Length: 289
Image (cartoon, rainbow, N blue to C red):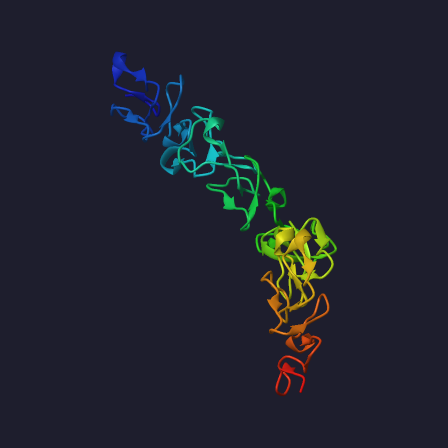
């Protein structure tokens, strides 16, 4: 009868074929198949189940054969050796992997900072990274955001160019923070332009309290003047204008009265020869008695 590793009896005794084994001694029993995902390779006459070694993608021997876990792989056939871990910056979401090719780069904006990763971690909000990043320090804050990313709890804070003196606004403009790393410029009251450059309003004109005036025509005449921008001129004699920051025309003095140029009040209109008084005061303009 066959000893361990052999089956049959008498002249028919033969070694257990590859991928089989027999533990019984002095027995004609047939050899047993190795457990699933294991084998003996080209070896014959295996005497114990432990001689059945794990296939590629598996580790261990005999009844202890298990699939390589996610994040690992094993290329060697018929070996009990441990599975190899994927390197940082890579991951493998499959079990039972038979090649290093199953370890793939972390996608952009993610990273894995340890060996044997089955997935990758997202970069902190408002940051990004290249493919295959192996540390959160390889995540960098996006444009308009700033911060030192040293661990998974690090954050990117939005940048205010106005408070950091990183704006391109004129000294005569107001800087407004409009979002992460963005801003707008608007000329101050009394100025006009696109904000990056601002020009003072012409003489005898103003924007009043209004800011953000973009054209010279937005500079409106002061009291005693009419028009806007470069067309501002003083009210003629015999007229007045008591409204500031307005392009409306000057008003005529009442009949039989006159005023000096650029007059700003109705009472600047005084009686002409033969008439007395001031417009809007007491009886107004009246003929001399």
